[in-house]
Image (cartoon, rainbow, N blue to C red; front, side):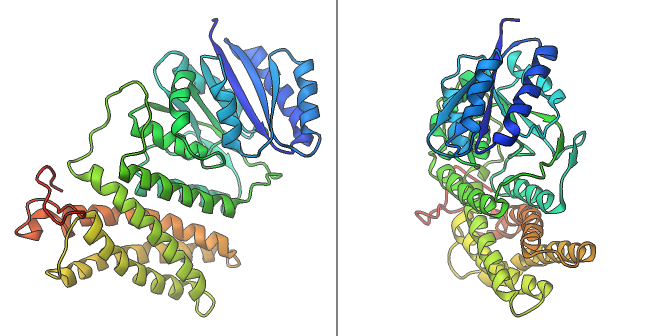
Amino acid sequence: MDRMVEIAIPVYNEQHVLACSVRRLHTYLEETFPYRFRITIADNASVDGTWQVARELETELQGVRAVRLEQKGRGRALRHVWSHSDADVVAYMDVDLSTDLDAFFPLVAPLLSGHSDLAIGTRLTRGSAVVRGPKRELISRGYNVLLRTTLAARFTDAQCGFKAARTVIARALLPSVQDDKWFFDTELLLLAECNGLRIHEVPVDWVDDPDSRVDVLRTALDDVKGMARVARRMLTGAFDAPVESRPRPRLPVGMARQLPTFAIIGVFSTIAQLMLFVLLRMVMGPLWANAVSLLITTVGNTAANRRFTFGVTGRERAFRQQLEGGLAFLLGLVLSTGCLALLHALAPEAPRAVEIAALVTANGVATLVRFLLMRTWIFHPRRLGHRSAPADPTTGTARKDEVA
């Protein structure tokens, strides 16, 4: 029972809730948690009375300490606390304690036993109970679908503020994590998966904080930028960390090279389609704006994937492959039109941001099916006739070591 867990709580201008939340967490851990613990309040350059409250709690409660950073950023706070920790396991939770604390021991137990390397709370699997508005629900689900379809993520909830890691693993990963803000969590998890580490998921009960001041739309845009950056690092082989070797799941031959390129093209296609949708929405209804924007970007997406993902060059069969790629357009149109129609049936006055979130969710599902269609049918080597393997787009020659 001499193991220790350190819980970081990043805060920025949380004077009104900090004392109540930390006392509640401290009492809960003292009464129920079987291991030693430390609660570290990481003040991200607050300009209200947060730092003073944190210092008072440090004096009042045993096992509570306060650190202050002169720059904002949740990732920056976690990086500082975790990299200097002497605990066996490091964790963090949001200061509003939106997640039921009864999930904390199930979160860290597999890490203390050595069964897993990282652990996350998830609001998006069976067994979780979530109370929050439709806007945040759609954006959250859309974001996680996009991660799974474009970057092959296998975890279900990237941004739940309830995570933990073995300290030795966290220290190995942190130097390779570039983001210091909200994308920090996602990048850490993607890096862990790329290095074959084991991520344990715990379904949680979660209640949305009505006082949350997170700019959801700006955070979503920053996350999309982060995904593009990670995809680029994956493509160049720079997304790696010096962690202990573990067996890595094997992808079908050729897919490891194709997925990052497909992901980058998918991110740019999604951004282009959303921009076109917003522009067309000014002169036509949402269903027509969606159909036209999706048709235009599908043609470009198919052409880019033909050349760069599957290495097919020349005009031979190009028209036929565009027609076959039209099936992806029809699929995306059905999914996105259905989502928009359902949204407007349930909420006729839904704001533009919710429409965009619905489109991202539908397009994420369509993206997965599009990749499978391209890989197993449209650009399969057997259908390309004289090619036995996809050509390397950098040389134009067939790759002898890979088949689709």
